[in-house]
Length: 239
Image 1 (cartoon, rainbow, N blue to C red):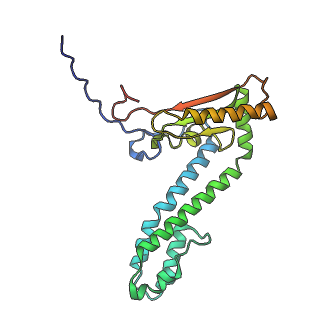
Image 2: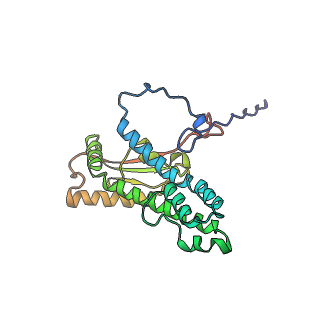
Image 3: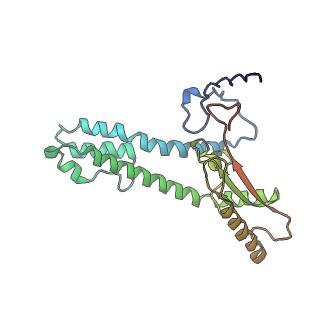
């Protein structure tokens, strides 16, 4: 029997998506835009992403500036000003007074200050997320009508839990967060059949009882979608 030559290793390819280094992305010319691109939605999503990442990215530089101010006479006031400028002026963004009042004797507690800033940034991101959901009422209805026109009364999406697909619903498919779509991530392109059957059963029973989101004689269907990604180590054979 002839020996089979081993398959040559494929060079690792950096996946394009959220978290990809800016320098590794292809250059995009200002006029190179698809005619169907929603520029307003693109700008809104970009602003949302950058604002969330920016809150966390500004924490360390701000605290480094605070540490450098410890020897100043008006340390507490100047430190609060640095934190407010970095994290915003929303209630609760200031550092606890005890961290600054005792700094002259015990030193500035950087760990406690960092934890406070991180929790504030997380709280601000959560509030922004909640506001965004409240503002999606009209978009939700438009999306429901679109899927109904396409013949689907429910969309059930199971993406791989890999970080490269974390923006699937919001950034790629541009789906609003609504009860019209189900989304639950699993490792690989797998999904829990029992859970999906329960979701399908509840959806179909509601159609029989209430005619929502469509009546049983409308001819619409329940759409199940499993999403996977290419392998970054061997994209020609895996993924």
